[in-house]
Length: 408
Image (cartoon, rainbow, N blue to C red; front, side, top):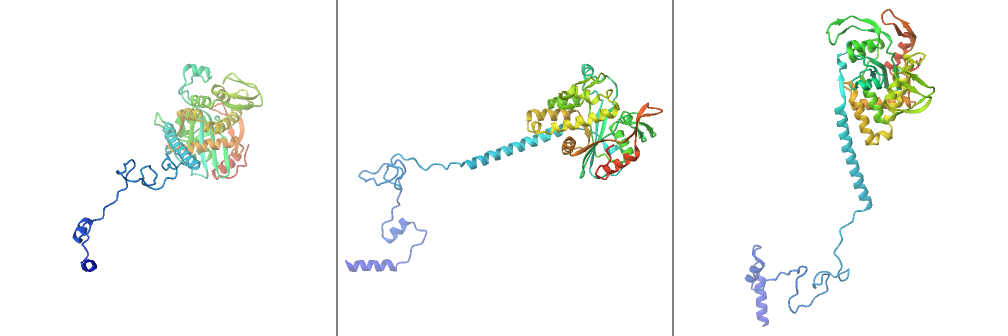
């Protein structure tokens, strides 16, 4: 017996190893042994073979690791999100939503801007100075007004189009300055080519608002640049209808008057004190001049004060953070606001923000220095004559973005 075992063991050791391609079953057969049987772990629910003895396990089937939860214990739970992670995903979702809304609003607003003024057509322009200069014009355009509107708003039905107010808004490193230009200013209108007649007209001296009547925004811009030396970077104009709609979209503008104001021509009828003006009342306020001792100059002061207040309310959190108020304001303002072809939404926002700064005390409100507010002309009746000594100093300060020292 022992000899046979020794011989068998010796023979097994002396045989060469089997090639790897032989399966365990073939390898076992070749070596004369019994193949190893694979073991299978029964799945959940498998029945034990007859006579088998169940082993301790977690599933009641006698297999698997020991149970830790007792009879009927549930399997491992899915991990729960922490509160911090939930807040993070919520914040991310809000940021994405806000970004989408902001981008959509930008393109919607940009599509409504009326870029109709081509400043590249302006002749003989002065060199650009320091800072940015906006020419802001209020015209007496009746565009969008019905006959009843003209009667209600006391605008009349005059044909053509003229400038009702003109201001240069300068922004730069030395703050913001809003300089009003009286529409009756007696200035030189440089030579120009008529828009309709295409005829060439020689230079002449007239009231400033004559330039707009003869050649529109481009000639008005050239006339202002010619007489001040200030390079106009951007142009913005709003008519009667746009002005009224913008104020109404804001829900009115709060104004405080130090004295009663009555003007039958414009329809102004206000008591002294603080009050909210709707669109119709606001238009009457900025157009009235007959109660003012200096008429046109007094009206300009009211216009400066009103436009600064309007810009302040339009840029307030109660407007900007309220979409039900913001969208109507943007829509009503841009529908009738005419600007130059290179005016971007960023430029518009900067302009309104600068106007808001004037109200907040971070800017100046001035008028071109006047030598004679009742200058008698030979062709245009009474006009406003500038004090050119002071005016040139003021213009130079704006051109070079210096601190403004001339206030009267």
